[in-house]
Length: 581
Image (cartoon, rainbow, N blue to C red; front, side):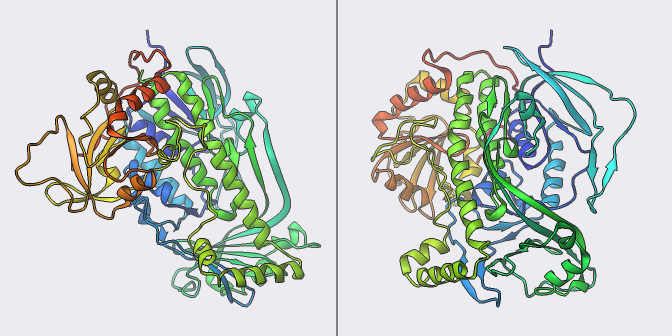
């Protein structure tokens, strides 16, 4: 008798839900996505993503398609009301293989992500379906959903009435349920999970514009700008053509009705663009929150994205945080469902992600405080501080290249991996993605050749050399790729006996990113790294320590007994393994 209808049900088809569905689908996990709205929202909310998320899109084999609709390497500036530049942020860093700054139009991104889900026959999307209840036991979750009686928002933000007919109640059985249903999460509410943090009462007006056909009205607005005007703090947000966004802080004495009035909007945007060259797609006064859920998991039900945390919009990390959630959670759910890990593995989801989320929220609040100063004296002090700071070479370089942004490095003692000390500093950090060269001279990004499972990357050596057959069996069950990595020009050659056995990729690090990462971890000659499916390092060790490290991985995934269980949820998928270089 069939125990479940699907391995995982995801509530919500926003960016978090879509990315999670892709990452589970490519691992052969059967997924049902339940989306309340019958059509996409149609208006932009998120406008930015970073190199870490582009790397996640790359792992889904959608980065190039999504990147076609993005503005890459866009400058972010703090400017005065007269346009004078206070500071500029742009990073040349390519350690993840992608530009750090990528501006997007969210409806285009969401549409493409949803369309590309069709590549997985075991992933099903049901729109206009509202979850009404769920009940879990030790074996799974029963989820009841109905035809949505809610509303979809059209381009003008007016409510459209849903189907008023029968509710069409349906119940499905799944192994796990993930609530990716936004800040007003039904799943979180039904779990009885509260949120802690701060709600900011200061309202802002957001105005989304579209250039009228036949005009070219944005040539003079190529960058993203925080306009530090104490009389009207403003966000001037570039987006892929023909879209543009402005946000204006509501000042004391102003009302929502006044701010959303067409004449007010015309007056505000006329400082930057010709109002007659644009159509207004949206005008909305809103407030924002900095909140984190007390719990991210109860039994077989988990939260992700805005359902688990809400980040103020000032650093563009709300959507990106949800994408990181999905990347962290997907491979762990797949490992549990396929019998390669115990349920305790899921406990590391919150312990790894929550500290990083909180750090991003703190940075967003700090940026908010800096750009929204309305007191002229405090504004002068901020401007003076930035003027002095940007003339100090070290500080200036640090700020220009995004120094305050939290690094992809899990808090010590909170992650799945060996504890890092002075010599194992790479454990729990995101490994870089260098450009690599294979034996016949072809070049690839590293992730494109190591696939979506674990990787054993040996620096200047044989990854198999000191691993037992039992450990190799465990690693192979987790779709592990074995790599011998050398500096460019450092591959063994000549009359040498090839000591390698098995399916080993011999690669040269063209731009030296991985070689430098090993060096920062305390290794110059030979070393071995165990890289998790989400590209975070489980361990960086000497070659004679690799067996110990694999045993630690087995115990942390399976529990102290280290016994493999039976397999379920293992649908075939052409995207499951690695690509041959």
